[in-house]
Length: 335
Image 1 (cartoon, rainbow, N blue to C red):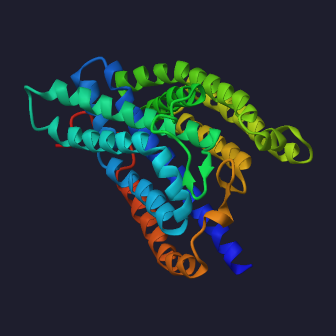
Image 2: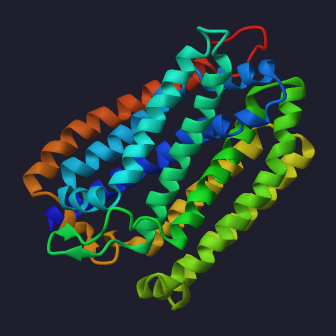
Image 3: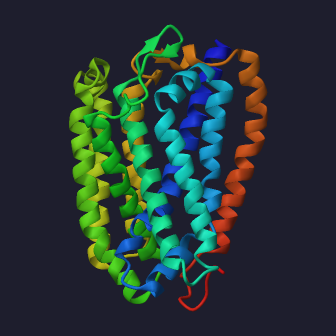
């Protein structure tokens, strides 16, 4: 029984790491996706300066989620990696290329536009690959024995293409509301204006994904449309509508903090919806949390270190955001 509890504790830790990565790194990927829409070099400089102090720390959670999956759910890792090898590798390369662009665009004049394109391309590619991986995982990964029964390009499906478009649009909304929070003047007004159509597009994609998801798996349909389970599931779309309404009101009023918080809420609620559909599966349609977990001794050993490590990560992340709170000075920045 204790082993069963440990596996679910670890599933919660992995889920926490993943959603924390999505909401934190999502907005700085969104800033990169919005880069081509900046009106001039000064706007691009301010946009990059807004995320420069925190972007690399945000990606810590990706390492924790991926490393944790390998350590405590090795069977899930062994199934997911071969099935999603190409999008995961492309995502990692895009994140590396984007990180290099952070440094190099400030060190050159002649090639600055090239690194601007690299920053945009790396951000967009990383977001799209995350969308492809999400779509394929939600659809499910068939297994043959203890391995994935998937070809190298089976991650490309109509549904995964939909999610590969939806994720960058959602990240762009996060980026726009973050820039509305952190910047001033004409660039702030510009980003607030972009956030309105992006919020509509994000909700539209969220609706489309929600409509198609129950048809992918009979278990999903049961969770969302069969009572009494459906009574709990319907709370999520209700909260999504409330968050969307508050987001729109905030953008219309010219609020700064609330639009960003509500954008984050949409992602958290979408993640909760996926969790409701998945539970207790680790890799749909067949691999459960208990089946995918490592032996109890491994779970206990890893949990001790994690209980020390996660509070430290949370503390320095919170400290970084506290130190760099407030508005970005247009005349100062990352050099």
